[in-house]
Each structure stands twice: as C-alpha cells, then as structure tokens.
Image (cartoon, rainbow, N blue to C red; front, side, top):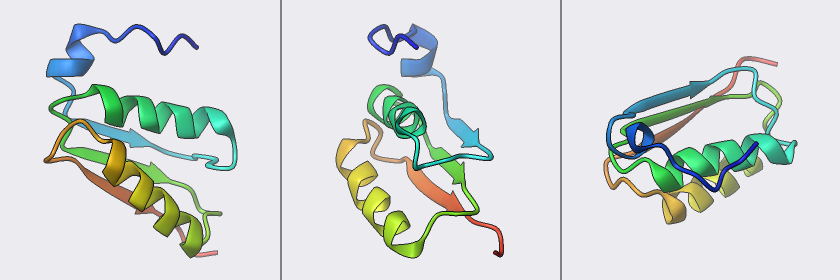
Length: 83
C-alpha cells in the first residue's frame, strides 16, 4: 500500500471513515488510521471497530491520534463489542 501520495479528495472532501473488523495489533491497520488522520483536513469522524482491543490500548491510541490529526474537528471513536 503506497501511503506517500494523498488524493485531493481525501484532503478536502472526506469527512467520515468507519473501519470494521479492525485488528489494531497489526501494523497495517494502525498505519491506515494514521494516514486518514494526518491527511484529511476536513475529517469529522473516524470510527474504529475492534472487539479485542483492551481499555489500555484504547487510551494509548486515543492520545496518539489526538496528536497527529490534521482536522481540529475530527473525533475518533473506538467501537468495541461485548466479549
């Protein structure tokens, strides 16, 4: 996956992203979420669904994603299902 090029539509149009059945333990998913946060200037909502994510992981990624997001309005949601 080439993450060096950013399409104009991602920068100026994309407002919502939802990633289901996510595996945050894999590096690719973290890179993808980071890519959207860093490059979408109008992103309002990023929802990540991973039923296996522990609370300490959610706290870590929440703090990390706040630091790297390009859009001030963007909210990051971690959706977890009952285990």
